[in-house]
Image 1 (cartoon, helix red, strand yellow):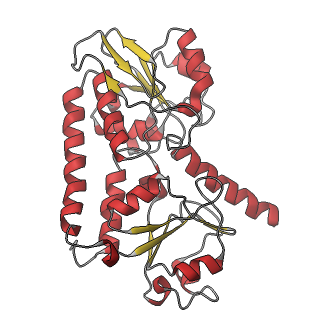
Image 2 (cartoon, rainbow, N blue to C red):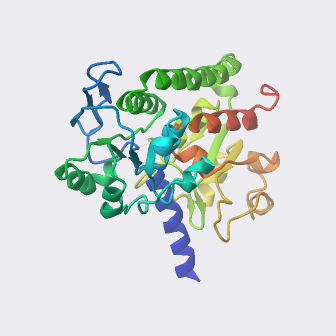
Image 3 (tube, helix red, strand yellow):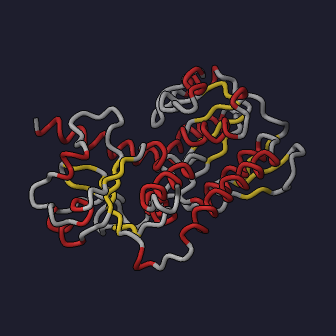
Length: 318
């Protein structure tokens, strides 16, 4: 039984780390994705997140995405028909599930990627060895690691430009920025001390939360919450029940329910022994959010911001 619990925790944290593999804390530096020639004309040159200059001779029409968030970005740009390979984790939108699979997120198959005959491969830092192998075979590969909203928007711009669709990327980024700004406007008059203290529970046995340098923290902050973070080893440190009770958060956010066994329901959370005096328990403010919305660096991060803002301030987002 103890082994099974440990395995579930490992799988959950692995999923978070995979989804957030572009977050701060990677070994490699993360230069700003740059566009050298600034137009849709080809050939063009892009500088990716590893500082590599990638020359693209002609407009790519066959794309392979090794990152679920990048797959979502390609579809959001209206370029889903160009995808000839995605990972088994690429499940949104529904059309992504019909695309040929080239393996898992952390272990894509070199052979299947080659079979997909891509003009361009979209990858992240965790694919370092694979990127080198593909480069040696003369495939064009761009590596990006969006770790916050700003770098996400820059990555969308870079992917759009690489595909010869810079204008579509500008339109998508304008729409995403407008939606974020709309949330900010509705909360502009709220001083920090009036904003709820928000606890994000990563797991319950053992209790785990987020550290200060995580994408989830930024999402909660942009949603109008004061994000409760813990110091410790890694981005998802273990915490004690006593620490939670002492911090007394106003709202709890979690991502349970995504096909995981033994995850607590809101009723179970609200009836935890010794937690009855905690604000979020007394006021029954437990909010669940799809883990793919809040952890995948793609356009749907803005959906997470809007959803959480409505949960934090229902009276302001009717």
